[in-house]
Amino acid sequence: MRVLLLSMPDTAQFTDFVTRLPNLAIISLAGNLPGHEVRVLDLVLFKPHFEAALRQALTSLRPQVVGLSAMTFQFDTLLRVARLIRAFDPTIKLVAGGYHVSLMARELTAEAEELPLDFLVRVEGETTFRELVTELEKPAPDLGGILGLSYRQDQEWVHNPNRPLLELIPLPCPRAKPDWPTAFIF
Ligand code: B12
Image (cartoon, rainbow, N blue to C red; front, side):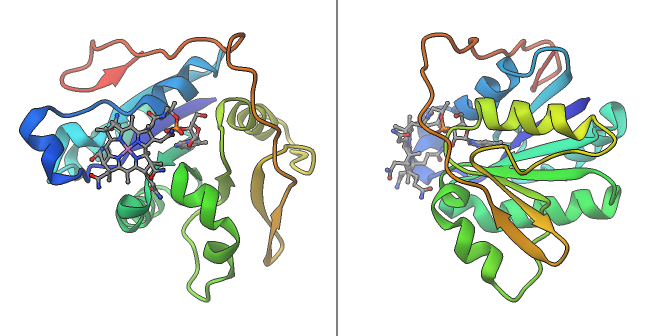
């Protein structure tokens, strides 16, 4: 599958005086998707005007799945980015993960306003996201057995049981290769 992984452009102000910090979550997820075509686009590098970089990545990769990562203070931006992607191509599956989604999955999915997302991955994402992407390749994906996943079934959101914490030692390492101008890609 073609997968694009995004971090949000918002940063706490103090970090801008030091550096633009890479997001470790999305490169760890990338390292755990063997056999898929994966790109990582850290929108922090393009802030505040990241839309052109996003559109270029969508146009060149034509992703089937986009994963979006956000902390709580970035979550409004995540929704804005998700809506931009929906408008670009409504067939792209949108998956959100990170601290806010992990803590607030039930509240977010209970809100009246329609979430522009197809899946939420709660807590550690490496195995859950890999299982989801593998399942989405099948003609009839079976999502019920993927621990830590929240997904839509008819009009309702289903929250699968939590995944036990991962054993970190055997996990493949993060992957990123800085050979795309000002972005990580491989
Ligand atoms: C290192 C760190 C920092 C570093 C740098 C982080 C960076 N690279 O940008 C520094 C010290 C600069 C920092 C600053 C801040 N931080 Co900080 N930080 C952390 C810390 C200790 C680890 C984060 C990390 O890299 N983890 C490693 C990666 C691999 O794991 P991960 O991010 O958890 O991602 C996994 C899952 O969440 C999930 N996942 C995440 N995204 C996605 C996306 C998809 C699609 C999927 C499927 C899954 C998924 O899968 C990943 C792999 O398992 C955490 C606390 C903790 N122990 O986790 C706090 C934490 C993330 N920070 C936090 C906060 C609030 C901040 C600040 C806003 C503080 C402030 N007021 O200034 C700033 C913001 C920095 C910024 N980027 O602008 C909070 C966020 C809380 C929240 N509700 O969002 C945390 C959780 C601390 C806390 N308990 O309060 N931080």
